[in-house]
Image 1: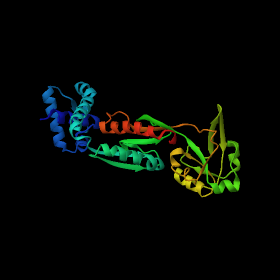
Image 2: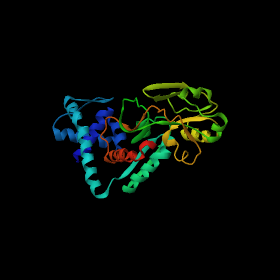
Image 3: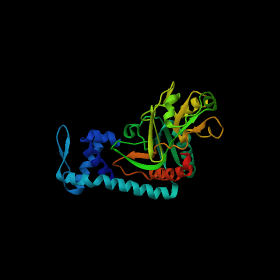
Image 4: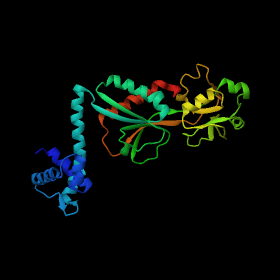
Length: 299
């Protein structure tokens, strides 16, 4: 019998606490899982579990094996994948999560560029502005904007993003442009509810911070929608620079208060803690880290 199957059955049983749950996890029968574990015990000449009618518990020998077996299996999987990928490239699928506007304006294009060099990979891009649960949703890697507080995930910084004040020409003809952040309180502002504090806009100039309370008729949970409302003359929007795309160059919106800068917000790739990162996921994150640099100040 293959010792790899025996070790996988042992690890699954130890982590789930029963042969039935381990069998479900491995996609094999309860009887086969029990057989694998019994053969591993016979191979080693020790008992790995104390069996009762309700559950199984680890013996001291079982605890020693569990301390190292998962890492050994992960290393073996990594080695086999590495050897196979040298000849046939990365295989299988990658499930990705990203915020809606950032996903539409950047991530989708980045994935297309990565896909050109990896023709045997498939991609499942899920766009939503709420932070997803990577484990329950089966997400391999998520691109996030802003601080990530979850302890169960690892994060790699890719870049920084700043926001820009914009308004449409029609609005500026009617109401004029603010000359300072304080003047925003006298204008109709379009609130992006994806921001942590939609009604508090912060700026910095000459080592001095400015925080302004704003208000307006429109609240939206899309930076792109906020830009469109601004372009149609409904107020001033404060949006990530990537959401503007070509709207400035075409004259649809005009940047305001360019002597003031917004707080830099981190753009990161995040993935689950406590696992060996598959080579295809690591390759995607490395590619994104290099690719995103080409955006420069436009991000």
